[in-house]
Image (cartoon, rainbow, N blue to C red; front, side):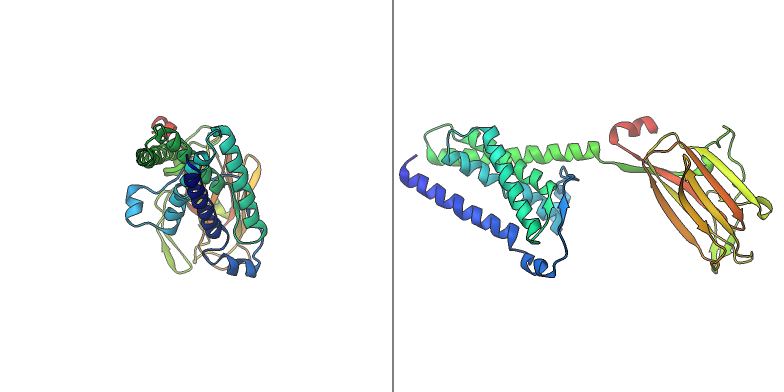
Length: 316
């Protein structure tokens, strides 16, 4: 590399760095947001950094799609320019310095209220720099300047596609999805017997006609009824609908516990005839217990299990 070429590359690197810093610290109305003083934001736990927009998303991209893609693509040039300037720098040293620099910029964003510290951004930016470094190593193998540039550009595109596909595969494998709705009365109760007290019938709450699709739980003779089920230590969302029918006096209560921990407690003594809906996330649980008192009716109770791709076949 001649002295003139080095000067040109250094100028490009400095100019591009200033441009990136502008977008990271000043663009998109960041100064206005900082003046409002909404508080510091630090996101240390990465989430969804393996998710990039698909081909269908790029046809009608949203701002989130553009940002996710840009967080990687915009930092590929650093992986090319820095090792081009400093030929002896190794991959590990380059990545260590790059990650440290991004951590500093992200911290400045958060402390100046010009943005947030987001570990997702750090990871995506670093992946972009790594792609650029790999493209440089693949491209700069000859003495022909323009051939090196062409091969490096093509290598960057190919590596980006590979990473794009890999991210999509990893996201698909590790993404959790909700399974089909399972009515609670499809399970067996705590004694191992088929569930009882789940006959369906219609009623009116708050003037709305209710037609339960799966089940109805109630306290026989307006006293107290306890229902117990084994959940099988699964991660799931529980769903409940409850209220007191218009033709009955408003009194009673509802309690939902899992392994002794109360997740839902409702007393309707001071309420009107109102329809209530509730969903509860449950990371793990063995025994579900429902206690109903008075005229409270509970219907279409069930859950959707969260699962990964590798165990969906087993569950079906």
